[in-house]
Length: 197
Image (cartoon, rainbow, N blue to C red; front, side, top):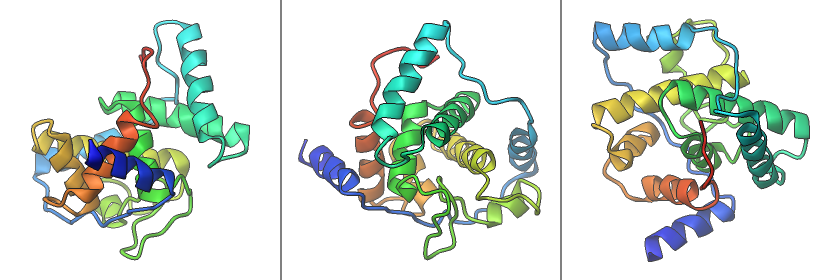
């Protein structure tokens, strides 16, 4: 419980723990699958069983994000993108919001000391490895898409172990601080009782 509270305190204070995903060679199958996931051009939609659930989720998440992103239109666009990209990657949208809070503090143009970029702090080597060399990692939808596809890849490698997958995402595999921060933000500030799909 102490670790959880400490993680929440660090996230609440605005500490940003952007890391550096480590370059790991990908097999041809993994590279093709990730490239296809990045290239998909489907529209960003809130995927809920009924429109009222979508409105409730969007309003609740928007209120939580208002301090970080004061402009309602920008906030709504970010939340719709996160929800869509998380769902298509098989991730909980609240997990992605927790990761974004820890990684970049919801700063679109954040750049880490290691060169990671954007909301989800994606390392530039990924655009060469699985995407198109011309992709702009500061573009909202591309940044969130890359981040979700990469996190899904790490979850698959780690057989669904969030702790280890988050460590890989941050380049801190085996160290507890980062996974604890993201998991604390996911279950704490971004936790959501209602249906997300």
